[in-house]
Length: 360
Image (cartoon, rainbow, N blue to C red; front, side, top):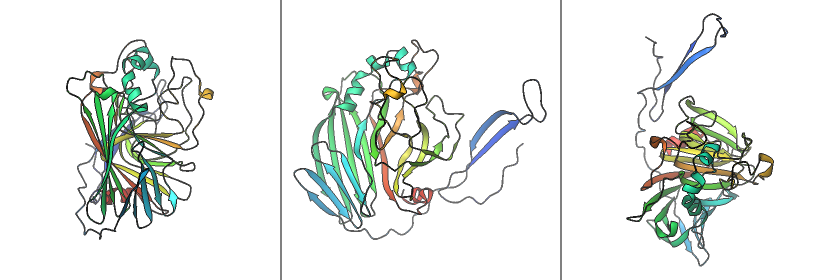
């Protein structure tokens, strides 16, 4: 057997054992030290953090105006646009963290496999739902001095579906975003390309660090070779395909930090593992009306960091590229989905791993 390394597990910390099998000697076609197989095992160590004493809630002020709703606390303020319902400003320490507001997102740029199996036409209703929403209501209520709840409700797909976003703003500067997708009884909607949110951070917020699968892109049906670990990249990673399409996704993410060169930025964690991408394009930017209609130079980069934060995204398939669909276990059937993300500012010198553990 393989001897298990000895260590003192810390509460709230996950541990993994990575194994690799390498050749001892050179052989036909294989050099010495060639990796023949690898595997990762999550160890049954660590545990939940013990509940510590709660800090006194900092008082929040709520301004409910005709054009926006603003919630302010010590050193921070968040603002919601009354016309769209979006969280479109998050100022902490006098600096803006959001370039484009938090919005529901159900569409991915079609891959070559998607074009082959007719996905752009078959799932077009979810592209429209990502572009056009009917804001039904935007309400604000104060729950004690250190907690404000903002609730936005949207109609989607001609009323066949609904999306609610509830923002719990805390006196510590954290914002919990709880999303729920519902379907009207009897609606016959197709499977979803993805279930999640999108938002953007200002130019300069390009240092991406995450605890999840990596370092390369990975998807629900293309992830076992991407081990869980702590990774870093730059948000401007180039489009790697000759034909513009979905790319750069990472699965099984525990937390994500996006920061500028001074270490200031935003920490995103989930109620459970999530998926994300961070680059210079929105899904719509990478969407071609027909395969081969565009090439990478035809896609202008955005002047900010685009984030997709997914509860889940369907797999990429690939049994063939001219008709085979994604296997059923890797699709997202039309049903109710609910998930929560936590947004928390990061200051220079903050440890995102520690911040993620202590902000649960």
